[in-house]
Image (tube, rainbow, N blue to C red):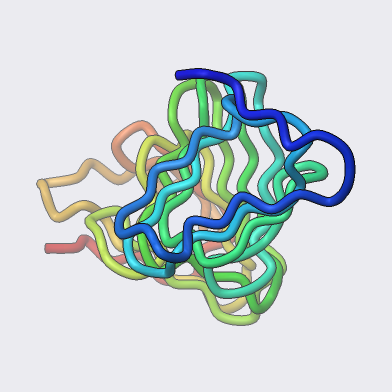
Length: 171
């Protein structure tokens, strides 16, 4: 639970050799790059509300911090935003955490979001945005209540969604 200070220079926290690494960004200062292991590693943001940009498979940035090979991303208590570039993906889970959190896929060509697990699995997000042209949202499969307002928008189990062209019950 101590604070790790990388000191001067461009510092890297490398967890590539550690199975199922769990890294809390709030435990580090002066570290600009975080390396996971592509096999179950989790990066946890601060409680201040973070802006995550997922630019590649399991990689991207959170403010000035760059991360690679983290299969799971977790937001803190603040209002987090997880934005996916066209080539961005997470092979594990995005757990948005507490707060009013948004997961935004509007820049992707093809969107597949699964609320029941699997690729691009999303948990604890209050708002999910598709791209409006080729987006599928799959429910939890637990008898979800869907309220569809118009044009690929609505709510499912307390989650507001927009820009989805296909909605699937899950299961």
